[in-house]
Length: 198
Image 1 (cartoon, one colour):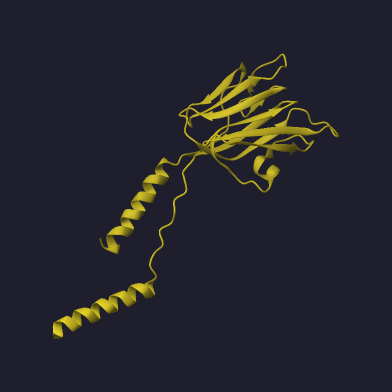
Image 2 (cartoon, helix red, strand yellow):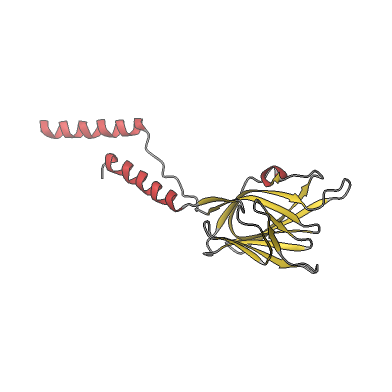
């Protein structure tokens, strides 16, 4: 096979793989609704399900711009197809913004291989959404997840959840250097010329 044929083939393969890598940001810009037990984003294929942790209320509220989770509850997010996904970022705010009262949100996650982990997010005591990516600093993206959950004593507001279908990294194929190719070409040319003389 010639190099001229392999480059377009590699480009086509990369384009096909990228086409199946679906990235989306769930913004909850739907009609307002109260007391739902789950929210399914039909366009992007993710479910946001509320779990009861012992407080009398058990529901999600859609404000038309964000999703609000009640106190002492957990919100679990998973793909409707069961495929692994990456969590790039989300915006979050505590339901209680009182100076001196810690606003902690527990982020737990399950990876596709069955392992799990957790992070504790410390929110400021100011009103307004904060970005998940800036809360952790050293952790840019959680990859290859089956699900993740957020829980807080005070409840929270969630918006702009950036998710994408997980694409396994590929091992790059090293390309021969141009000097090596030139040397091989000159060697073949020399062999060919030598055979013609004989």
